Image (tube, rainbow, N blue to C red; front, top):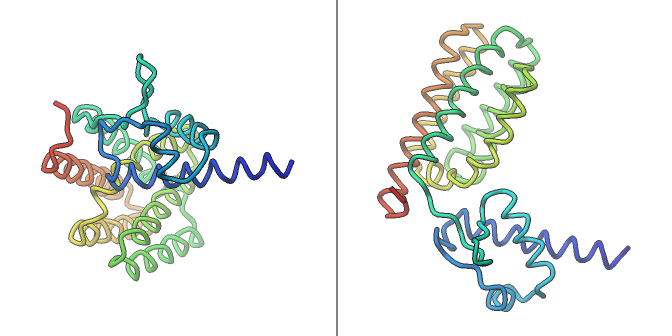
Length: 221
């Protein structure tokens, strides 16, 4: 039992480190993962590395090739655009429904998250954490189980691109301004305004993502 727990812990640590390297572009799109070299670099055995690789493949952060090799997937402009377009539609729907269902307690919770988002806007990781929490809370308030389920699935895919939209201080300030408007619209129960703000917010993130990965020469046309 203890050995199994140790293996699981080791695999999780390897998973976390590989995921960080992918998300922060230390492992760039198209990079092939060579197990012996990676195991040596991470100072781990092949078993936890393979478990971590399998998990990252299931999350589409690594890709199994027909030849048996494993690579960091390329960034496809069309796929990125489609992903954000679907997310924008879901965020818009949930913002609209949250306006109908939000209680005073819900609004107070959103405002608390917004305050922490504002306090941490200068720090990329913390700003992202509170931004994600705000959207997740709106999804929960909306109470649409199917929309929430799809939103969570898309969220795991969008995670790969948050590095591009969250590293810029200017973009973080813009996102915070959007969050302020969104919470105000939900508090005022202005469904049309909330839906539009949520939609435009995601489209802004889409455009910034596409711009940055294009500038870095990482997009596959």
